[in-house]
Image (cartoon, rainbow, N blue to C red; front, side):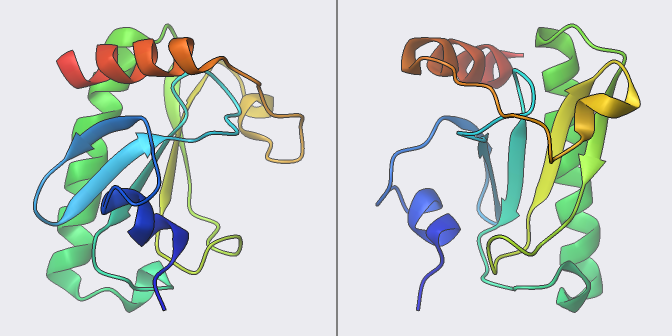
Length: 129
């Protein structure tokens, strides 16, 4: 059965696309901790990140690095925080979160509610960067 993330990269569910190639997909989190909070996934359905083949694992992180550098160009922040939790959706994903301090990447804090137009504007800016 397809995960929600598979349905997203296959465009069965709308998303705010940030980057894509033949193996990976990056899109804005719809319940972000910060503006620019992006999820990076492999298109291959693998639940646990450490179950990826070594080459896929390395390529996923290289893709995430490229996306993070683009986010930094668009969203003012000290760093891009990284989290791999993997419990909420059974599909490997990396959270890239623009942060200025440690508390900015606390997943227990309330999420932002951004309008669709603002989400599209952020996604487009990152794509262009």
